[in-house]
Amino acid sequence: MIPTLTWTPEGVRFIDQTRLPLEERYVLATTYEKVADVIVTMVVRGAPAIGVSAAYGVALGVLKTKAATSKEFAPEFEKICARLAATRPTAVNLFWAIDRMKALFARLLASGATLVQIQERILAEAHAMYKEDIAACKAMGAFGAEMMPDEGGVLTHCNAGALASCGYGMALGVIRSAVERGKRIHVYADETRPFLQGARLTAWELMADHIPTTVICDNMAASLMRQGKIQAVVVGADRIAANGDTANKIGTYNVAILAREHGIPFYVAAPWSTIDLATATGDSIPIEERPAREVTHFAGKQVTPDGVGICNPAFDVTPAKYITAIITERGALRAPYEESLKGMVLVS
Ligand code: MRU
Image (cartoon, rainbow, N blue to C red; front, side, top):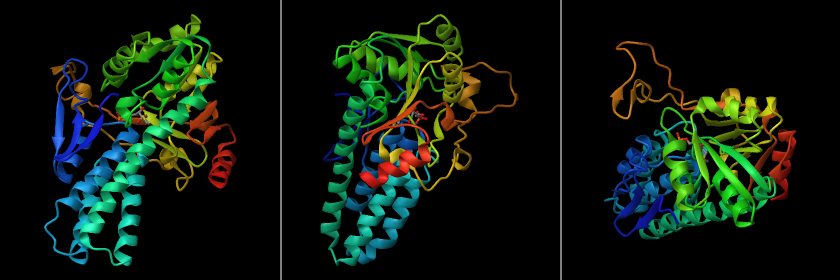
């Protein structure tokens, strides 16, 4: 299994995603501040991986405290959560994980738990989130595999794979599961400018699994669709609003429109922790603006004239009307999403 993030006695060990695919290096975070730093610098990235990383960050903060009692520790706990929450704004899994830790901490405090008991329970909760994430990916894979063509091209954007989760992956989990069931799929991976998650990460992890993969530049998808080379699109998500509008890596919206124009199904695969029923529509999803340098430089070399204006939103919102189905660990949902999302909360 790809070691995206691993708990060790010293802290959390991350595969450094900024170095892949040319170097397989690891970063050890022994403090919550370091975990926040690896999220900001995208050593670890991808919505579910960010969520579980933050959970382990909270656990590190709790384990490393110098406070003597749980009461004395309470203000420090708030500070730890606030630091981790201030890393990246779009992926709701980050806030979902921190809120889950806050709720557990409040329950433990109210029950009079000692600091040692709190340390044990918070770490156990982070481990539970890690395991749940892998199980959710496997379940999404099983639901989504049926929607994949028996044979043909599947386009994906960014990296919604093992590297964006604790293992197996969301969009790539669906593809893995389809391949495990004997489907003959050829993956087309959008390179995904400017951070190149598709070219660097999706291609790397699919090649490790011997799944046939072709990297294309982001501007090639329409032409391939027109040539009949793409039978389905599957992507991940960073936040899904209550009406099904979906924030995902910048460029996803373009792909969704192209898929509609060419009559190709467009699927979103995401765990329930990515669904944000408190956000009514995609218009209210905060979109992270990344540093200009990611656009002005390519592989460390400046490619734009000094002083030119730069726009670098990390995500866009695909309106729900372009989404054929949202594949979750609870099942595949179809439009109207206001109803199917609410219905899925009720049955689960
Ligand atoms: O900026 P990133 O690399 O963290 O963005 C990741 C994506 O947009 C993925 O496509 C998304 O998280 C799906 S993986 C659940």
